[in-house]
Length: 105
Image (cartoon, rainbow, N blue to C red):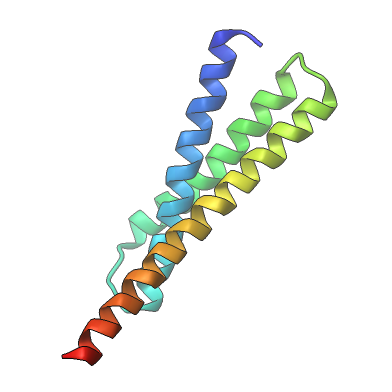
């Protein structure tokens, strides 16, 4: 794989991770009553979907084996899931610590 292709996939991965964490944060904020603008919420979803589409387009046109394409696609989706899970767990842990501190006082 050429260096420019590696750069493309790296950029799409970073874009996707940021977008997925943004979506998770927006959804969680809304559930907790924290105001989130509709435009930011929509842009977060659009960015997540766009990153997935960019990966699909890149893999569709890539000159690699189909098994490699599948590996990259599943790795990408699992990375997005992992980023969401880590962000959720960090936020849950912070809330638990905050509640513990309140109950001690």
